[in-house]
Image (cartoon, one colour):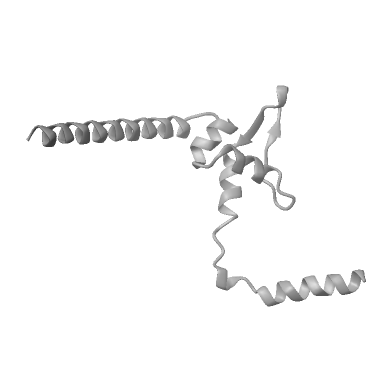
Length: 115
């Protein structure tokens, strides 16, 4: 009976911890919604729930990079509205909608032209 009671207390403590974490996340998101238009990388991470590394990769993409500016001391800022537009322009592309044969043909044609 004692072990069961200890387990119940531990489970209750875990649920309370998760509940507190969830409330903190909701508060942070609410603060982000009313925050300034420009976000630094940390704020953008929380806004989009992606890593800083992913954001940096998106910013430095050779094609269609994420719009960002660099200000004093190397700080990177992203305009919230531009970020939202950029994300919306990148929907998930279903694998069966990709014409692999056409892509392969284009690559082979480029190699033939270069040779």
